[in-house]
Image (cartoon, rainbow, N blue to C red):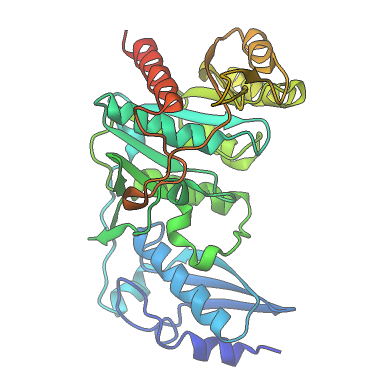
Length: 349
């Protein structure tokens, strides 16, 4: 069984990112709990909620797993000012948050009642389509448990950290930030709600976003902690509800729509994904998942159907690989471009 001494030994070369001294030397490891292969740590840092903290947690998880832990849970607290001063540090300056730019940036949350309806595909293609329309666009992969945006967009690099600020990755002229950038080897996320909310807040406050016309938030399905945090952080957010034509999917999606209405978010419309399959041979449409779900949901939410997206997949370009992004000239890509224009007209008219 893993011991506290082994954990400390594993972390002896991991440095606090600002004081440039070992966590062990700084006595920054405030608590160690070990139970059935699960190691829980509480660490004190001179600055919390930063890009460097995200990088540090990768190093800590990797080191402790290397010592034999099956999973690692982390909590962070602010180091006392006296301790920081003793080691030659100083308090960091307060940085401006993207949340302070609500007069310049339109926030669009893309949500669904359940998983598996293609919400992230819609988010990614809406973002790229808005960029193709000449807009300055960012996307936050806020589906922290089920992050997929980097893979969908064919992103292999990670964000740079300069002067304690995270710089988003650029792809298809879209600025991208995702929990997937800060997780080693596709490890599962085991945090509870408050930590998830803090990480989401970091994506607003610790990322050096360029000027943005639109920020797309790919939310987790349902009405859980992260969705609630977004609704409280962004009182003026717009919202798009994604469903399939199936009646049950539309029924469940109505809950997400009802949450938006109760929190006074404006629903831009409904996207009915997997609306039909169109044969390339005959041109006939087959309604694989039934009909009417999107229209029923839009009527219930007093909104409209922005687009009906058929079943399909992008043409794969090995030289510019992005498995979920449709080209402008692709029939489905044209549907997304049309939807992007509808949204621009709604918001900027």
